[in-house]
Length: 458
Image (spheres, rainbow, N blue to C red):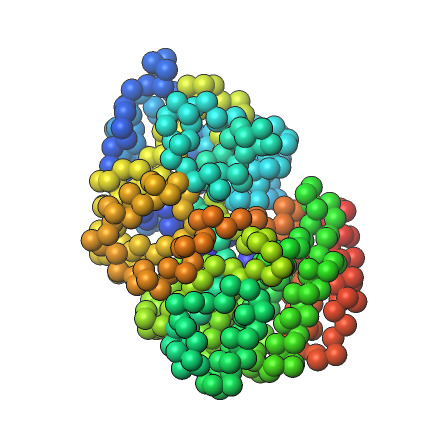
């Protein structure tokens, strides 16, 4: 999930889901150890090896490399510490300094495809059988207009509506039926405040989380933040104005958002866990922070899909995909798919790997079975859930409203260009709307659009 940014939300999300994948990596053998295409040993350079300053995850990664090579003796891996970095990627690509396999965020595949900087993996994915096992909704992130696949999604999330089931009950609301529209969010927030005295709804506003959540909300209203090629801001429009007007009215007319308005992810998590907030936007993995870190009762946690307004528009998503060098041979592509499947997806497609990962999670006192946006298809996801059922330690019924919708809800990636700088420009907009009853919403958006356009035009 999101953490206060260093370079970009996408980069940090990628790092977090990558590390989560390393913790979950199993040593179960792959289904085949034959050399790809029978052409002798293949050597691959694979990125994302944790640095020596992170010895635990580095050891996990190195063990995974050794296990893979043992299971696939005709494939030699050369692990390197190279990670995706928006500020250096293009120079590395131009200089031929990128590894054969690299983890990148959801924001990147379409640009990489357009610039021909990634390999077409369609055939090798079909030959491996992995293509049919992936979630087609998530896979769209990695496809061109013809349906060819250029990356493999290995971790994904979509933002939904976190809510406090206990406050819902105290307010006389049905905790199994969270709001499905933003009008319903407004009504529920008002009721929670009137019946419990707590903030019915809260929204992140600082450390670039304000822009991040404004983007999510704008998507749900049918808006966008940038045009397709990321050359122009597009949020100075009716959907974004409507989203901000709703926040304004909840804050100043309904008085259902409380006094505190300067929240980042940590602050809002602590306030929610303390029972001071009825609803806020976040992803399902907020469960770990809220329950394990901040002490929320697991029975009080609830999550529904992203409420929509004026149509079924979709929700912001993030995650990671694995890309392969455009210079890779067919044998190297096949070997790359074996590695990607082995390290990042094995627990979803291999029962022994799934059970090992679940047992490791239980032993580490981590949430096991937390629903999210699956990277595998519905049937495979159901099979995986069956494998880990004996080890699940989270209240799955509390995630049911989200899981019933999330797999099919349209997912929309973050802004494609300079997302973090865009978020920084939008933070003050959200803060102004929630901090000043007389805030001029159109003027705020116009000014922010000018700031963003100047950045996009560099």
